[in-house]
Length: 403
Image (cartoon, rainbow, N blue to C red):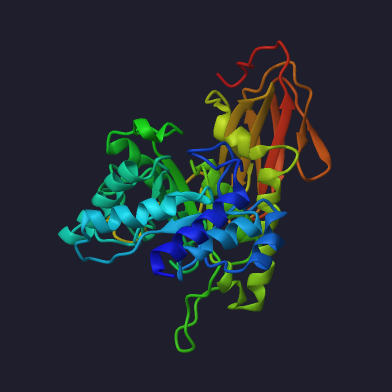
């Protein structure tokens, strides 16, 4: 049996295992929750219950499609190459063979290709054309981009990619958690600067920003680095979403073994993933809700601004943000507000501009409610704290008490 025949058999087996499975955004409807470096069927079955739905491996072979299918997940299908010129006929053969599988979520292009290297960018540009040409389903393209790129760098990739990632490795980058907002927002801004919009219609040029979160130890014995706290991990997950992420990746399932504390962070990511995919269907709210921009939030106690920082690769002397950031969306006749405290101290805040007929808000996942009065409510946050609110919408109009 030759190699081509073996590949085709494996792909067919993978396809038959997942036929009819619901895809993930932007091609499908589910919120993307992807794990780097997950390898076995048992591992995938163990994490699927939390909502993780896409697997990745650096040792990609066509058999991985079958592994993902049997594990109940989809796959990032990796295409080979570094800086060499790959003939179109060779790439077409690989893409056609893999594309027979329904287990593919995204095409995973060679990562970290440098935009200033002609051959490397030609590799990415060619693959993005060829997956459209030789994949009958024209599934979306993704390439991992390093976390230190500024808007200028990210813009170079936007025309080619359907999924545009922000690599958000806070402690590895030596940054306070307020940096997460800068990292995600600059990636979102790069999409607009490049002349594109955000949305699921990727075949007509819309883009999907996603965030890759930290779950590894980047230090060495002679150069130890700070280890992220569970509170920091939960903050980063939700701050990325508040700042525009429409999908979450974690690097990596394998490296959670690096330090004992990372098992705690892994459980935090599982909790957040469960909240995204659970009965509240927050993933659908994030993807499909209509953003409400009329609310305001002011700090009433504690630091009004976050810690200052200087993003790598910029000419900024220092940067900080308001301590509280939030995302408000209307979906399924409810108003949802995700509030995040990026200050590393306790903060109290007041939200104003709520619909006047709402008398309380449910604090999801905390088994409590908070009262509202004249279109406003007040909440307290621990350091790097997160609250997610839900309130039904009646016939009342938004309050103008903050005008």
